[in-house]
Length: 356
Image 1 (cartoon, one colour):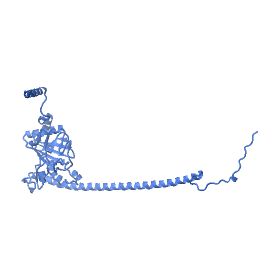
Image 2 (spheres, rainbow, N blue to C red):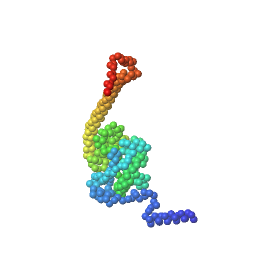
Image 3 (cartoon, one colour):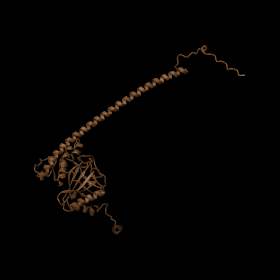
Image 4 (tube, rainbow, N blue to C red):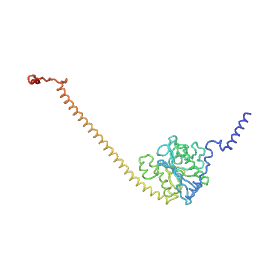
């Protein structure tokens, strides 16, 4: 009887919730279904795109920026919106192993199955780490996400408002028939200047490698097709083996573009070397200037000490002389020869006149 009473009470609560517009569902249910606003749909339409079109996400650690790009009717991609990244975990550089609290870097592919509507961090999607490149080097890690809640432990964190919009853009792209979207994770914008600033990093060659994909997109605004061979990323190539360490093919699916990209690598490398020489000269000049200033401070301190010592000695001598003088006058303890007064030499003092 008690069991049936509980069922009845539960049914009444459900009924009451519908009447009051509340929900007994767990917190967050349905948030992944919130439609894109009419404003966003209009913005997409104005740029020649739509919610169902393909999209690309680029993220830059140093700049704390996540970009959403959408494919337009021209077939090229256009920047739709930039979002501020609340937090990312670790330091510049890729992720190596589970627990190192590093946010990954490189090229990744997000599929519908990696979207997480019931995330503990409002909403999220999995980066798909480890990818083919990561597995080739035995790198480990699970559940590396882009999520809300503005906190990070190896992931990329956004505000809840931002992740809701980004999630909805990805969701509607999948609904439109897209099978995935590309996720490009960079330490910074891949310019010769930024690489030169980080020339001493152990990750420099890795960054130069992923810069090829960055440049391919920058130059064409078309999605680069990435793969891995000879233990490195390769872009827009035909006939790549499933073995990440196998020899790279020589044929390209976009030969004209990749020839231009290759020329840019040569040009940028020359600029990189010039910048490195300049930065190192500036550093050397800065160190020399710093050493000079330190030496000047030491000399100044030594001169000040010598001057103070001389002043102290002079002050001590004057003090002794003055002290000796007054000791002589007033019979100080240091007076060895007392003054003898000859009374015969003193004239008698006359008596004052008598006034009658």
